[in-house]
Length: 119
Image (tube, one colour):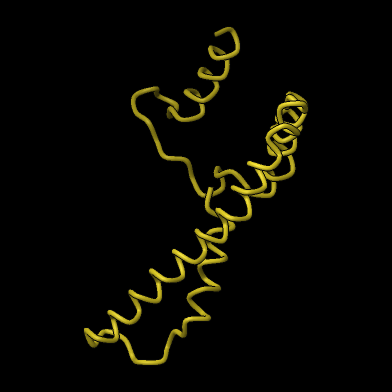
């Protein structure tokens, strides 16, 4: 709570205009730069997660972790690829897309990309 008050005050003062009568939206130059996020904020979060990890429990559950990581990613990529392929075939049947624009390989590659980045 002691940390929240100064942070909340700083955010409120940054968002209020000079007359304190209404909020204004941040300008484009006020947005967070992704480079700052990845280089400044993300490493301490990952470090804290790794530092507080109970290593014995992690080693005991390593089989489950690896099974969910690999098998879950494979199942997810196949499901996403199959759904995308089904939707592209449906769009061809409905006359909304030309036939041959997306092959099964393209759809499965898209599924692999999406399942690898999906939380």
